[in-house]
Image (tube, rainbow, N blue to C red):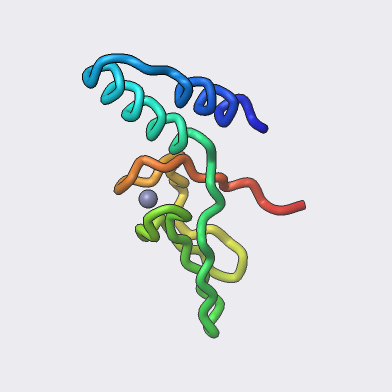
Length: 90
Ligand SMILES: [Zn+2]
């Protein structure tokens, strides 16, 4: 269990007023998004590869012939705020 999952599990044990619970559930959803998720890769026959958010499938960027075309690789999805794991598989 990662640190984040551990903290989420502890937060889920807490009880309090409606206001407290609202803040807690907001914090839990932000914590969930802070754990990087690998992008979804869509291959095309002409060498293009597109990357989509692993959570909401929002378009992130693309590459061609294994060269990343765009220089900026966003650490977070612009749409849902999910952290993106850009590490290449070893
Ligand atoms: Zn997203």
